[in-house]
Amino acid sequence: MKVVVAIHGTRGDVEPCAAVALELQRRGHDVQTAVPPNLVGFVESVGLSAVSYGPDSQQQLQGDVFERPDALTAAAPSDWLRLGNPLDALRKARVAATRGWDEMSQTLSSMSVRADLVVTGTAYQEIASNVTEVRGIPLAEVHYFPVRANTCVMPVRLPTRMVRGAYAAGEWMHWQLLKPAESRQRRILGLPPATTRPVSRIVGRGALELQAYDPVFFPALAQEWGAQRPLIGSMTLQLPTEIDGEVDSWIAAGPPPVYFGFGSMPVDDFAATVSLIRDVCGTLGARALICAGSSASDDIATTERVKVVTSVNHAAVFPRCRAVVHHGGAGTTAAGLRAGVSTLVLWLAAEQPLWGKQVQRLGVGTYRRLSATTRKSLLADLRVVLASNTSERARAIAGRMSQPSKSVTTAANLLEGVALAGPPA
Image (tube, rainbow, N blue to C red):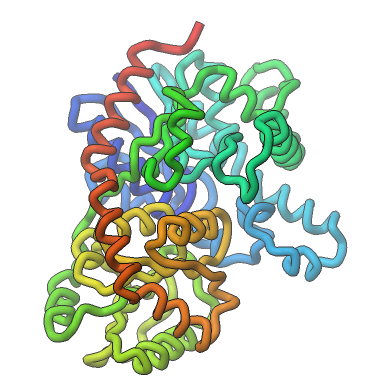
């Protein structure tokens, strides 16, 4: 079968889909991928063919908050107040949400000729939905948090009808941002004008929506959603890095460190953040392994107590740490819990506080916004995370987490089933 995997976002969005794409390719299927230009090299390095799809996702993250596709959900009230004129915010959000739309539609239209299935994510899902509609082929999505209407993530328990109405309102408002670009795309594809919001069309067509996170976080969701949105666990390639040996030697030279990392998220003043980590860990008598990720780190020296690296293999490093401190990405959160170590989420944007809240609910750590973190708060949070009872709960939770290899196999089986069945009647 021919399967097209079109995913936009950071490496945290792309890597899980690359893992299942590799499994489908291993099974003999023709798999073609489309990813942001900054991740084409990464996807090709693991053995997949890839083409550029949409804007550079790292540049989006490093731009102003209102130049990112997740601007509306990531913004704090203070961000809106800074803009002054709300119309300016809406214009910027519309430009951000539809940047590269026409080119992405053209790319996916070309790739999907004679395809049996298109797999996408929530970013730019509308483009894939319209292309698969005109092609008459199935659509599947990979979600990294509960993005569809549900009663499990609300801070208070609400009636189902009220929850669905709230989600529908949010989806409708988001559609208003996309409408000019989507209407143009549908006209070019020869589709009639849409009269309902994109999410309702995607769900109405019966698209398979793989929930790439563990049921342990939302135990009631599996029953609420059923087979159309199976919770399969997180997927990852668990790739080694060039400095695994160096990191291994440093860890072995002393007591287990506390890991700090923020994934693809840019940290405004990384040097100041490192200084804060040094200070607090020094007070606690702990060593710190800091992953700089996309932040500049060339002028930060490594010592016996603090080591700064550009990347690590989470699967290899996390089990050897006392605790992990990170931005709250879905994949990183799952990796920490699989390793059986407690977690401090210092979130920056989007759905990251949702994962922090689940960490706290499970009793395996706590969370706070990074920009609100001080020396006093970091000391207090790390004392909670490093407490013996928190560590014990983290070790217990590890046994309930799904293994990535099993999650990948489950995802591939489900995707094959959808492709073989063809589009719903």
